[in-house]
Length: 423
Image (tube, one colour):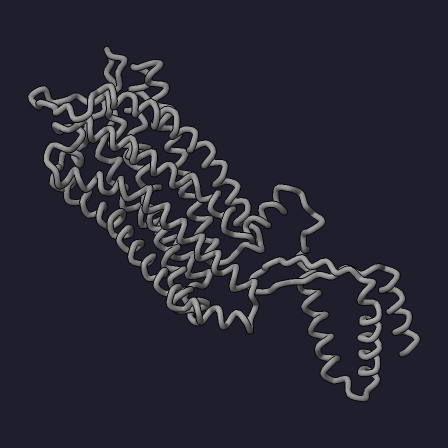
């Protein structure tokens, strides 16, 4: 985390402590250059671009459902975290060029960005990922209740609660520091406030937040993913039997969505769990901290874990493109200007109304004038069947599969003329 790694070369060390050379200082500097100054800004830049593209796709009308609301909120928190990561790397690069100016910039921004912004966005991402797994668990385990429990209104309320509670919970963190400017010195001084000197409160409150916003959601995420996998394994044969008499495309798409969300959760666990274990080790193992005997080892691992958190916030766009056909199609229609394959908002309603009228006329076609007209149109359709070339474009708007057929203007006009003569 930022508050663990920003102090690599700036904190005043205790001269009475004998540091164990498990990892040399040169190794720490090399890891800082590779992971903090090179890899982190690259992933932050391209990940920010991917999250912006994800937001543009997820706010489209056809993509508005509870799951995509959560994905959009997750994209926002990931984008904010990547912005903090980019600023973090920029400060290190600037500090390597101008040590005094870089250190002043670090101390000035640390209470608001390092101690608050990066931590808050990371914890919001943690709880939103847990909510995604919870929503998918309900969809897999209780499919008949998912429409009631996972409504759009409930999802929006849950997202708002996560954002607001996390922001309020971490407000004391920046209040622990104050910035002082010395009149005869060019170096900015970062001191603690009265709240910061209350070590007992900081220790208890910090441990409580660490449990509620890091270890508890990770534990829930692991349990939910195990439950989802077991539920999928248990109901796989039943879903396969049901799919024979139902829409195969819808079942297949739902399975891909489940796999996509499982992949998002697995990537999150792989990238976040090392940082959580590293934080837990500072509480369990004496001397393993920023001021302990194993300072260099702690800083080396912290560089890698912070980079992994950046990776977690940067790769979701790739996962969406790989697993969600609906997301991929909407992305192409939005950014590749393929207007020819786009279905307008009114076209789906017109096709559904036409289908209902045709089915109604078919059910009341026994010996009536309308029945003979329907029979004539049906025969006309069968005669022209070989001459027409249907173009089937599947667009998953909700749970409806729309199949749009193109007919020549001359044939449509011919049918209309014959209909008028018959009537």
